[in-house]
Image 1: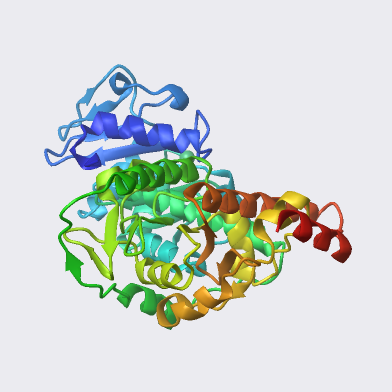
Image 2: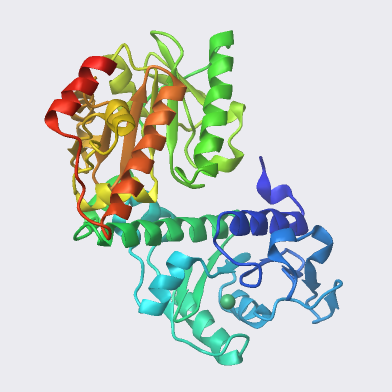
Length: 426
Ligand SMILES: [Zn+2]
């Protein structure tokens, strides 16, 4: 979907719905705006229920300061205007008070985007604006000054966060990705020290390009069409279940011995459509489309494991807490977790580019899911459903383990009981 072809009113309503629905703001907090090419500022209203915003509620501030619409513009309109003045490249702004980002804001700490390369790619470095009274000129000055230094994401002291971008979807994705970093870091801190990526590791990700040649498919089999739909449904569900974010998460499925399908690079996971998915045949990718950066890793796994028909690489804050600390994710919690996940090995960061065959070698019947340090949780399955189930069970298991920390130590299922499960469930 070409999101930026929607009218600013519709874009603001859709993104406010996403922000509210995913718990990134309360009904009274948060505001969004778009500056269009006429210089009209479209902005969410003040004192209107954010959970039930309609297109007719959106306010417009004209370049001559005339206000059009049935309400008052957001009380934070002045800081939006000051950011647009300082940063002519910015055409959309998002402000919210998500609980995880507020935690950082009130501890006066900046969330680290270097926990996974994609988050750093989306958000960059995070700026910090000192406290000032909401709606006041000093607050606007503090925020706009920080954006003027080149940051696209600014944490507001004892308040929340502001993100900006060339369009509203980008600004929203920066908010959601930063919130993911904050959630992951909060969970990870209770496990141990959090590893962050070096400049070299970040550069390795930025420079990495798939070098696979392209081809023009002549036909699309019924099997392929069916899998396109299954992948789309699964990605939408993973997004709704917060197992993927708008900017992170890849899924692929084997069509036959020569072909597999994989999700594209850079498409918002909520808006993924069947035609976006990329066909890969004998090491060639469908012309005119850009596959996920994980395409070569998925290709190696399909070649090595004829029984694997679906692979998911995703990030969810609970599982990623283990991938960024290197702490073991012990699935011997309840029978379901052990039967579905068995052992979950951790493989070093960087192998996804330089040694995909080593990640593939870590996958077996006894370890159908692996964690790639500071990158992803990778699950495999004989079907799309099974790989998705493993992703969901991994996240539930990680959450249960994290929730156990304040209650008391994990008492895992014993060796003998584990063996019984292996005998019964294979
Ligand atoms: Zn606010």
